[in-house]
Length: 123
Image (cartoon, rainbow, N blue to C red; front, top):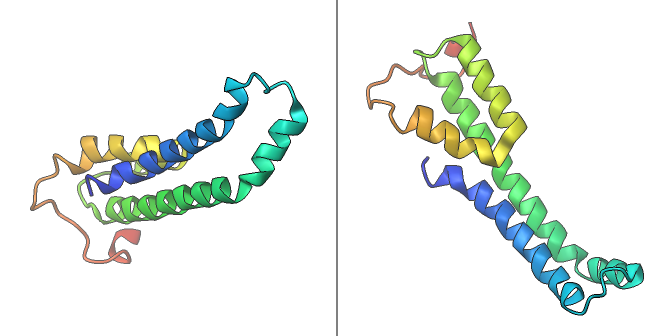
C-alpha cells in the first residue's frame, strides 16, 4: 500500500506539469493576454488534459476505496477515528493518502486484529 498511496499525487502533479508545458508557449511569447490564443490552445489540447485528469481522478478514487476498505476492517480503531480519517481522505484526497499510510498503515503490526469481511465491521 505504500507506493500505491503516492500514485494519485503523482498523477495530479503530472496533470499540472502537462498544463504548464502547454501554456509555456504562450508565456514565453508573452501572449497570455491574447485570450483567443489561450482559448485556442486549451481547446486544441483539451483531450489530453481531460484524459490525464480523468486518469488521476480514477486512480485517486481506487486508492480511496482501498483505504476505506482497510479502515473498515481494522478492529482496534474506534469509530470516531475512522470517521475522521474518512473525512480527511475524502476532502484532501491525494494529499491525504500518504499521510494515512505513514501514520496508520506503515506502523501497523502484522497481527493487528482485522475483520474478515466488511459485513462484520458494520455493527
